[in-house]
Length: 226
Image 1 (cartoon, rainbow, N blue to C red):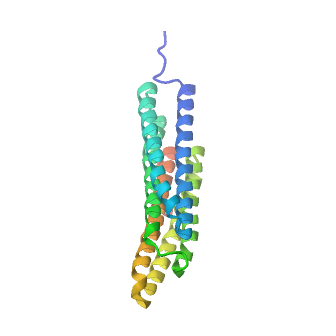
Image 2: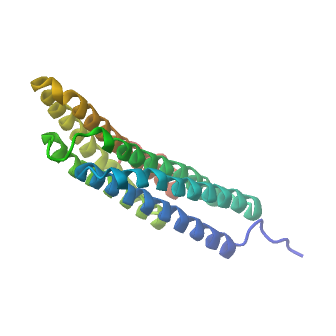
Image 3: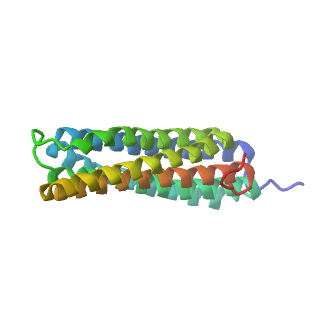
């Protein structure tokens, strides 16, 4: 009598689909956290910012659940080759999404360091567009992950250059702002920290894209590849 495979195709596909859905939920949580942290920053909403910091624990719990499911999937289904590659990618991606949430939390923590809203800081108006690019990269890379689409993953990587350019522009603007008036140094340093966190979010979205590409193709994504 022929022995069954280590896992049935249908069972593995179902478990992997559930895992993708969980990681997508994590991505949605992180994406919303980026947007809310920027709203809190613009409106100086310290109360909501503190709530966002506390809510990050939910993302930590989701990551723990994702890790448990991956370990269970590997133990029970014994995936091989392409299937194992997808399972390992899911495990790594869950960890990266959790770190993206940490960057949003870091931004929220900076809200209390800004002056009151009527003391507006001109370079602050540059950050929302940068945040839009970063959160958009997170959104699109999770779609690429769910769809197992290497082309979408590659497209996300290419957008990271625009985010880096944005950061450099904001850095120069804030540096000039600090030189004009020493009183601007404190708030400008806070905004520079925020911009750096957004730039790091883009880096992590790119890392996820590279994992998605590898899981889908078995090949490393080389910068500049078509």
